[in-house]
Image 1 (cartoon, rainbow, N blue to C red):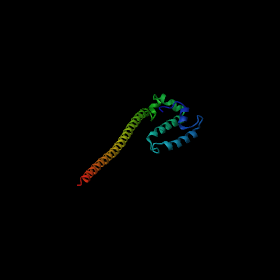
Image 2: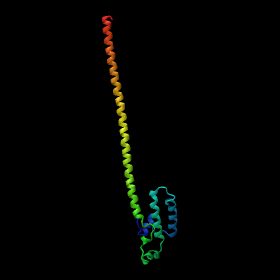
Image 3: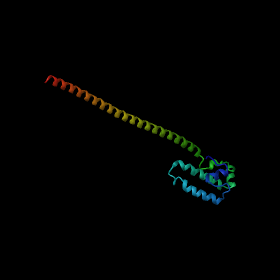
Image 4: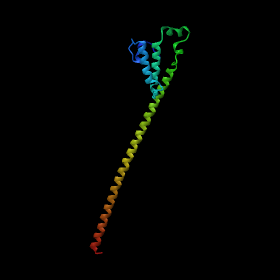
Length: 159
């Protein structure tokens, strides 16, 4: 999320009803921050949830004076926010993740194609062994038949 525009958005992020009290907001934020804090969450893809929670918490806990003060001082809320550059980094991460996913899919496809080629080569080699075994058996049969005929001829001639 780039920027929170309403109490409803902020409450949805923290999983709270719109009528949540400050105590409920603080409790929910503490529980969720333990779960999604970057130091506690090894999966870097889930870190954005933590930053959204922090932004929602800050939105819910700010007073009306806090909402007006940056504009009075000539600065926008985005200039003050520590997450101002997050939109660009999220877009870059999303692009990297998409490219990485595509690379993984291509690599997996190539791996499967290679496995299929190896399987076909093995089947071919096995078939060739069987064909060669049949050819060898036929050659042996032919030699035995020729040997029998020669033996018959020798026996008939009395040699």
